[in-house]
Image (cartoon, rainbow, N blue to C red; front, side, top):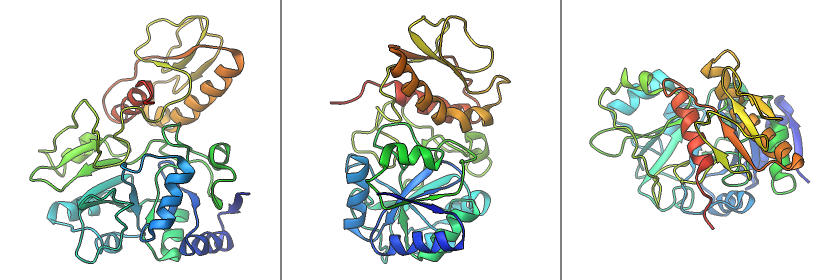
Length: 323
């Protein structure tokens, strides 16, 4: 049975003890709930893959309470230091070369010479990481490829009985995962849009390269598999009409014709849409199945700002799932 811990001093202490002992704890960040394990402990990391049924070639992000601790494991050049000063704590992940003393397991890094690191914001997440005193590998706390969780209830709906505990800190504010920037080459590369916009990144690194349209067979960072964040119902993008047997994920004024609608933001606010994205996909998937609907139609979302991250998640949700 999975314990549901209150996010007070006692609950944080229990969660930290579980992590240090090699257990699995889901905890809320400003983006989504992560499924945490000791990143140094290959057996504990293997427990993440087992609980999520996640492909082992997809690397994990390791979380730290502050930049100084993160950079004990990841080599930070001047650009990485600038990005950390600007965006940490916050929804930015940096892929950096390992240090010679890096303790993050090869399994957490998928055997790559780099590691993905970030310092999340939020008092509970940082208190847990500081109390645990270890690098915490934490992908989203959901079965692999399914909709990411933004509440403790979402975590339990997918992972009840598979993990030791969930530390309930309430709903996540951002609602989409962290932006991932690869700094291992001569030029920074945006691997995944997320909570930090490309416009904000360009203020620090104006020459940042955009990701390729296709996804990597052996990805350098999480969230790069083509079929990802996918509900069980098929997803149809850029919908200009909706059939009676389709659920509708709306943005702004709603298309007529669906019996089941979740509006990301009736007033077309991208921050509201990001925060409501995963909950909406989850609701339409579950309720759509119950009503016998055949698909989810998605109205267009603009590509600027957080819209890029939302569109990235929706595109992955719409990809055909691999066998």
